[in-house]
Length: 299
Length: 299
Image 1: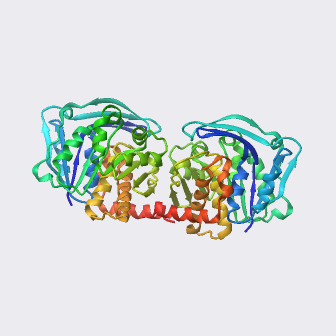
Image 2: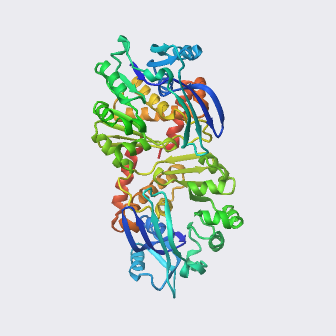
Image 3: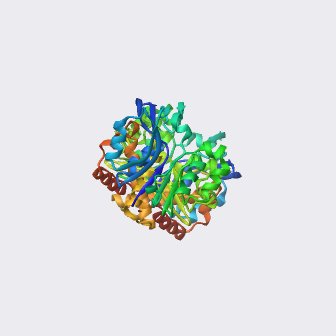
């Protein structure tokens, strides 16, 4: 079933303890769309500048990512330069240029308005709400947010949370949003704000999923080498919702399997800079690591 | 089957963001022994002062903890006072008095020398080695250590590691011991130092178990309230090895189940100060949370 993602597509320059990668493909919607495209077609709504490599857009198209919603504007694309510390949970933004992204006002092509699966990647809550107004009766809407919006646009974020069934954020964001350090209590508070379910991403420690009385706890796939953690959370979201869109299975068991597929995609994502590992990854690789995940965790 | 633990039995004073608890039962061997006693008899080798509450020793005995190896010496017991930060992964030692523990030189009663299961709680590696010399052909020996010994008595620790099949340490200790930040590589390096298996404890994030080519990753039971994390790691070890001693099942599946039982005990441990929760805990409670653990993690 069709899956729509709205968010940033960028050009990143990354520095990690393992090396430096200038001008690689970045942006939350990019990571989400590429991960989801392992499971089915994806509709992408984003804006890029005229500096954005044509070859990358062509690659998106070859992966089944529909570009009818990607606007190419005169000017430079969103660009971010970040540096990771030896502890890769900590990173500094060295530069951020919004460029054409500054005036991003997502407009959905008419054909996208019936998308049953929707992911609102991390953009201003008012823009996320604007997307929601344009979709008709989606089966599942997931959204991400970040500290900036929690701190600066709380009323808009609160309004959005009342409309978003699935919130996917990291543990630091969950703490800030809820005012609770403990993740179980943070999740309970967030569920009281509107979402039916909340997924808390904990990086190398995996994810916690809370939905009503149900809780699912899953560790991350243990990796020997993390080259670049950028986009792991969005890749996780893309793998998870992409798998749900493919399977159509909204049962608890189906959701849990989708979460593990998300973890598998994220584990591949961080194995090289800017998701280069995903370029050579096959569906067989995904299935193989899913089976390894089972054997690493079953008891 | 008989399980022997050698280590500290102490009187602790704890301060956490949830409150203060003066003069509660503490010490690594205490936590281990109490947790293991849910699964079968335990032999305890330790030293306490004449200030140690008789009622606590009586409680040990009622739990099936054999006290033939507990020496009561004139003087005060080991005493530790610690304060936890709002982030309970961080704590300060406010005071440490070794007292009678300063000259602890473990001597095993003759009847303990055939113990098939042995746990060397965190004491100086030379003392751990002294215990190993006194046991005959144990089926499983587990050991803990700490930063102090890694930094100050490395030759003794290295010698010990060549004799210890199962090392159980936390992630910080694993980093220090291996020089590797990444846990998969840290584990590989530690296995090259001698142990057949290494269990890396990650507090609220669960544990990683590495044995040859096999890896088991298990999250911690998500708790809404952590009152006091003191002793969670030793409680985990006691639950795990206690369960192994009960089941006798050394298969991969048996080990994994034992690890989850260890996690269950640790999750109860932190629910009150100084393990008070364990005083009212029943085996049924343990089994119930084990089943909850299955439903929280299965997919």
